[in-house]
Amino acid sequence: MAGSRSAILGALLALALPGCGSQTHGEAVELLDPAAPQYGKTYAEWAEQWINYIYRVSPPDCESPFLDTTGGSCQSYQDPESPVFFLVGNFGGVSRRSDCPIPAGKALFLPILNVWGDNAGVTPDRIATDAELKSYVESTFDTIDRDSLRLLVDRRSVSGLARGAIRSAPYVAQLEPGKNQYDCVGIDDVQGEFQGYQSGFWAMLAPLPAGHHLIEFGGHVTSATPSNDLPLDISYTFDLD
Image (cartoon, rainbow, N blue to C red; front, side):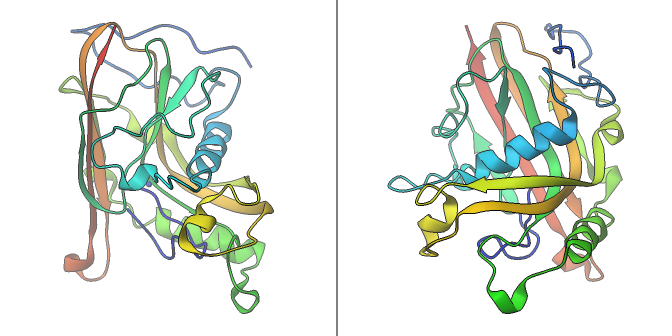
């Protein structure tokens, strides 16, 4: 799940040395250590890259990864040279993505639940201060039901998800003119660098072996009214050569 304070996404929505090793069928799957850099970046730095990835949605196709119901466009906007491949949630609800051609040999990085906030696309009268942006993501992070978090690989639960928690970390969104998601919703001239904060529960998995795989993740945030709880239920089904 992802969320953003910026105009296009509104309130909370529904999401050193290289890492090494690989997962094998039948073995317990663990997070690549969130306390150490993986593939040259910390979890917070990969989260910043992930945010820039979802902002790259652009005309003429405007294929938002959040709205991809089949997984067929999951390679759009990814960096083909990166050792890491990004997965995403949705705006809340269920997504079953069975057509995602995930490349072999790449680590997977995803937010189980996350939120971010910046001033991209925000009208001048609604510009938030740095302190307000940080408070926004931290207060939203505190509503995540930790007991609801789940990440399974081939039906095996990944343990230690709390280790991937980031209550708040700064980022810089770099929006190219005419090549960002604001152009897809008719908000023109949103370009340049926008500083913000992100938080959530993140996971990086080592490259999976050849074969058929199923990745499932989700959880929900709580609210004063249980009927307003925002659930997230995502799965990716794919084959690696």
